[in-house]
Structure formats: structure tokens, C-alpha cells
Image (tube, rainbow, N blue to C red; front, side):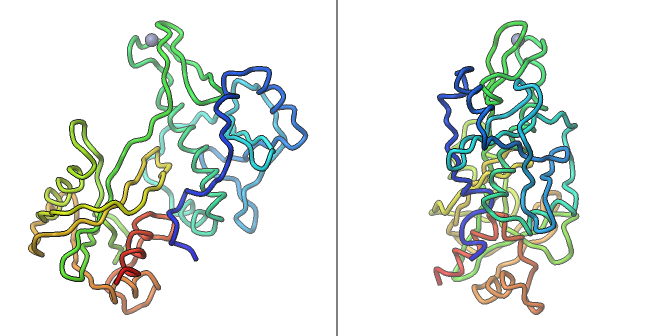
Length: 289
Ligand SMILES: [Zn+2]
């Protein structure tokens, strides 16, 4: 049943952190008969006709390989891909992601997010000198001041405000016609996740919330967010939209959300895709009713 578990989760790899700084153990993993290298076209996954990941033999400079972990004993690696940061995500990638197996999307998602991090941290933020990868791809070290950098994720809250059997969905400018989703925003320094949920709902929609309840989380590899999903109880259903941030917002009841998730033509909005945690969040809420 798609959409029950958040997308980009469930890779189930043994990440074997203890190997990352152990060159001898890494050499054994590289020479393993079942070692595999993830096929990537830039930052995108290479997939076959059935949208399955394409794997090849491990080759190239070991310093340019990212160790993803063990899959039932088989060591998995991904290439370190030099790519410019990608702005808008192309439609073809969304079609691939919609067809991909959830577990394989999670494995590629980790490789993509890690690569984005490397590409955005080529220079030291402290002294400006070049940095180089180490820890089997799970870190970089500055050649100038020896500062160590580790891959980070950016926490983003994504939430439904709920009021008397209806939830709030909104749409951003430029989205496909009819598409609405949960509102979202970055957690800022100096606030808790719950405070970020309340602030974003108030800033974007003018909604005041009381109780804020955690639902689920998902890594989102564009470039490296951690989406943290909540349902928050709204004090009332009056809206005051920040139209610079969102184009429109709607209160929708369970029947409307269920119709949207089922892709019904008469649904009040077009639902986010199953690999987005907004889909999971809407689905969980519908099943609570
Ligand atoms: Zn430095």
C-alpha cells in the first residue's frame, strides 16, 4: 500500500559507520565479490525499463566513492558526482520517482543528498581553503585549517492545521494546476519544531494553533531536507494568506482528502505524489476519521 510509509525511507542498509575510518576494512569491502556501484546520471538515478536501479561493478578512485552500507552482506557504493546545484526539479525525475520501488528510492535518495552536500561544501566555511572527502564519503576535511565537516540535514516542518473535521492545504505559485499540499517551512535557529509549526501556519495562512502532534518524518534529497510532519489543532478556520508565499489555501474534509488521494476527477484538489510525506500525512489523517 503506497503512501502509508513515508517515501525515501526503508532502505534497510547496515551503514557500518565503524568501517568509514578503517582503510583495511574498506579495501575488503571494495574487493568483495558482491560489491556494487550505484548508476547515476548526474544526480539522477540510472534506471532500467522497470524503473529499477542500475548497478555496476565497483571501479575508479576509492577516494571518489561513497560507501552507502551493506545490503544483506553486499557492500554498496555510489559515485561522488560533481554537479552544479540543481534548482527546479525536472518533470522527468518526478515520473521516475513515481515509478520507483520505495526502498530503491531511499537508497538513491541517500546517495543524492550526500552528493549534494559534497558539492556544496567544496571549500571550508572557516578559512576558505579547499576541502577533500574522507570517512568513505561521510565527511570532508579542510586542507588549510583541518576543520572537519559532516553531512547535515535541514529540518523542515510540514503540517496540516485541523479544525472540526477539516484540514488546511495550500498551493504555491507555479505548482501544477489544482495541486494543493500541506504547508511547510524551514525550522529556524532558536525555535523548537512545535514553535516552527505554529509560526509557519500563522505566517503563511494566519492560522493560530494550539496542540501540535508529531506524525512521521522523511528524508527529502532536494538537496538534503528532513521533513517532519505534524497535525496541529487550529483555534478557528479564519484565513489570512501571505500571497507571496502561497497562492491559495483550502479547508478540506475527510471525504475530499480521500477523493484527492484516490485521484478522483471530482476531488477538490490534486494530491501530492505518494513519495512526498504530505501524501502520507493526508492519508494518515483520513484513516483517523
Ligand atoms: Zn579551513
